Image 1 (spheres, one colour):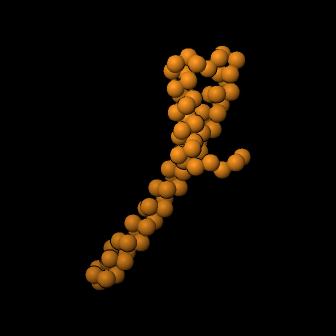
Image 2 (spheres, rainbow, N blue to C red):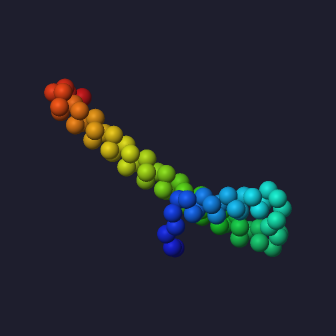
Image 3 (cartoon, one colour):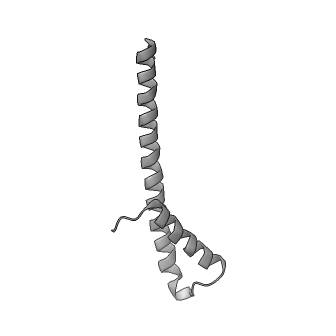
Length: 74
């Protein structure tokens, strides 16, 4: 599986949703588009989860550093 950015995954997902909402996707392609949308959603969720973990790690490190500077125990 090639790695795509969150932005690219969202753009592709939005295009699929738009096609579904406007009935532009032929029935013959519907299952494939839904599978692709599912794959894109998993990619977006993964990126969001990883980003959340990284942000939480940085915030924890900042909090620990502040407590060390203040001399407080947390």
